[in-house]
Image 1 (cartoon, helix red, strand yellow):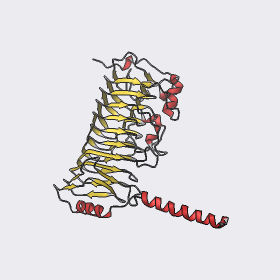
Image 2 (cartoon, rainbow, N blue to C red; image 1 turned 120 degrees about the horizontal axis):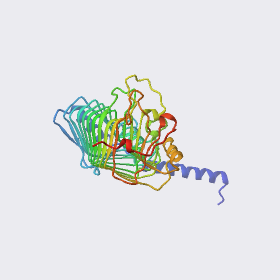
Image 3 (cartoon, rainbow, N blue to C red; image 1 turned 90 degrees about the vertical axis):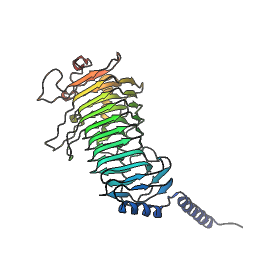
Image 4 (cartoon, rainbow, N blue to C red; image 1 turned 60 degrees about the vertical axis):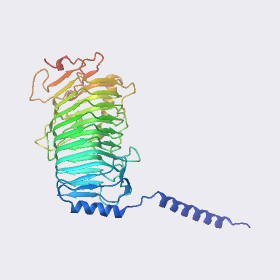
Length: 397
């Protein structure tokens, strides 16, 4: 029997249509509404001292879990690879877990594919995140949520044994908080692996930051409720091969981070960087910069844009042989000033005009590495006097 072309075309269309529908139905996540309602009900009815267990399995939720105003609650999975909560296709809210409560412990689970931040904890005292994993399973994409682990405006924060990947801003971020510890964590595939922003008294140690755009960031930004952070120690970390192309959404401050950066200090005060392995970066091992390098304007009269009182001691630097990131302004600067040779320590040299002396911003370097590349690029004077002699910055005994 002959089938006319129009009829054959219609049959083909219907076959493809229904095949497509069936495929989407098979791959679409099934929302586990019963389990979600049980968990959210326990969180709403919780009392101090309660331990809320989440069993092993992979569960699909389309809205955040939230705990508000109930202190002393523990939320615990069966292990970060055993309890997986996916927010693929999230319809309500942006976070995966949102907490505004004191003395909270969150542990032993994975949060993945949230529309926004994976875990946000705000305005809380005594926060512990242990053995948590956050990720976006599609890999590095601009559309991923900004932060994996995100305590903000908190006191006494402990983040340990956690893993964060593919955040479009920072995998592990602590902002505007006091007394912070980030230890024994693994951050990979993010724009910023670990970021400390506008915090007071923080310690980042025994972590592995690899395969990000930038490994560890210590930033102090204007026009935030808690300004002018200080006192951060970054030590005993392995910071390696952070050469991932920057995939931050346009306008994000971390968009300035060049691929191939180990550590960046931006308007940071009283930071000690010591006993780290800073390996395999194609642009900058450690960048020390004033907020002025961003050329962004601000209206915060109380903000101090300068980086000062910085010490670098006993770090191990090994450079990548790859070409610096030509897509970023920092990378272009390295290419222009140093013929494409990556730098171990790059200092923008922007000084507070009210301070004087040979080393007015108190940059102290004690690095016993004969092939170390150091440069003060004199960015405040259009790079007129680039200095590669770091003798003025050697720590005084």
